[in-house]
Amino acid sequence: MEKVSNTAYSVGCDDYDIDLFESQYKVPHGIAYNSYLIQSETGVNLLVDTVDKRKAQEWLENVEEVLNGQPLNYLLIQHLEPDHSGSIDVILNAHPEATVVCSAKAWQMMENFAVSTIAPEKRLTVKEGDTLDLGDRLLHFVQAPMVHWPEVIVTYDDKDKVLYSADAFGKFGTRDADEPWEEEARRYFLNIVGKYGNPVQTLLKKAANLDIQTIAATHGPLLKDNLGHYISLYDTWSSYRPEKDGILVLVASIHGHTNVVAHKMVEILEAKGQTVKLMDITRCDIHEAVAQCFVYPKVLLLASSYDAGVFPPMERLLTLLTHKAFQKRTIAMIQNGSWAPTAANAMKKILEPCANLQYVEPVVTIKALLKDSDLPALEQLADNLIAAE
Image (spheres, rainbow, N blue to C red):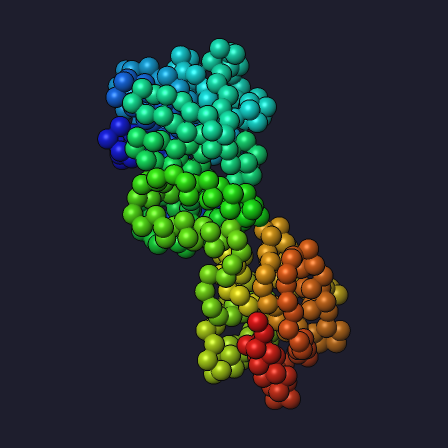
């Protein structure tokens, strides 16, 4: 059992069998459902969150192994999403002696996630600034509404200097996944939490006042080293600032002709000294494309016209971006259409809800095949995109 500290254990489970998290996000390296058991030196046992019902039995065995016959005094519920609340009944059936601790909003929602009735004397409601004395430490509760549900609280252990951060600082992948934290944490954040940048900024400001030595999220590994790096990335992502310089080129082609144009634009831009990333959104992970749109300050969209609109893979990507508060970016467009090009207008229409987007002219129209006569317009668009602030 991995230790969080000398008196706290990670008792969660890794799910290697799941293919789609929340039935939409690809997780080639699985997902971790984290839960933590704090055992104070005064004999008080507190469990932080439960796990998805997929792993309920394995998780219960982990909890019981650490408890080793001792009672469970408290169950702290920070977040009611089913991947964290799916085993509330399992633990309360095993430990009816436990007092359940959560926010007032969580109590309003609880009956949707726990079948068993929790008696009034077994309920403890906490709010911003409240503490829970475990004898050798105080747990400090911080409200984090809309990070990324309204009932969320996070918890700071002032003895171990641990922030139990709920879904904040989580990532896709099991705890032992051999991969950089940043890549899957970015994809997780920008697709799941990304709409709620302002609440995350509020939470970061609160966390800045705490002496944090470990971040224990409900997904992914424990974070103990170089915490400033992780916090800095969260600040960048949640404020919608670009993470690096360069131009992201996104292409959606039906028969491959628009792909030819995309590769030509990459060639032109790189010849002008630009860092360029090309993604074919008909084949790549669409949610990785969403994340990459927040990485770069400038995005070039190339798409085929389709049914008087835009090719559906591009339509889906742009729709997802509007859901995730895409903003503060420079956009250029190239459309392809054999007789009635419509992609550019359709793309701009989809992006109308997004704030602070700057569009670069000209919109270049390709009629099926790239021709030598199209090259001056591509060069002009490249120059204008580079020059745009």
